[in-house]
Length: 300
Image (cartoon, rainbow, N blue to C red; front, side):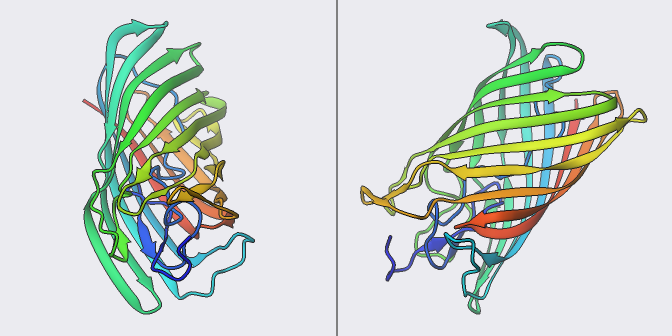
């Protein structure tokens, strides 16, 4: 890494993949194109053919950076991000390999405020768009549902390598995923969205972030009155090293685990709302913070 030059360290929760200027750590800026922990209950339960809007909203804050040993980095740091991100889903009436063919896009709108050692910068605007090239939704039983899909993250957010804060990551990412949901209005519920990110190179910095494995999860109990309560969060592991100018950057892989309370309300008529508050732990080479997530399905 460029240890004596200006580099970036990320606050890792905004959908846009925010970047903060400070010591360099895992993945470029220590951030990710995908917003860790965004999904929750019903992540694998796709509705019948039609057009739907799922609204994601997040508030993330962090004032601690962790190094490769999990120790606090001695820097005066604070980041706050507010994100509103509609996801537009088109479930077609076509069957492919036995599943319902679907397409989707997430269009994030981000407000990001960063302060490092007394210097600050704020930005607002469009983040990096996530496009589901194709997805196949399966309904194995009234309770068990799953989706296999391929997502592409497009570097549509604004980026300037000399800025302290960037809303966009400035590189493409390919993300295959599999998500499964067990839904029980009166009993145990469980969801897991399993993803692998293959990051392309940032041409402005000649930096290529390593591959990233992560899982959004939720486990809860349904009380038979439209409500489910439990816990949710995410697991994150960087599985390969970064490369700068084609040279491997050693000992800087990121990791984290987040957990917190989560709830779901489903009126049984096509509308549902989930909310969770997740606290990051076991963090390495990334920002260590907290996030409040809200997700709602708005049928049309």
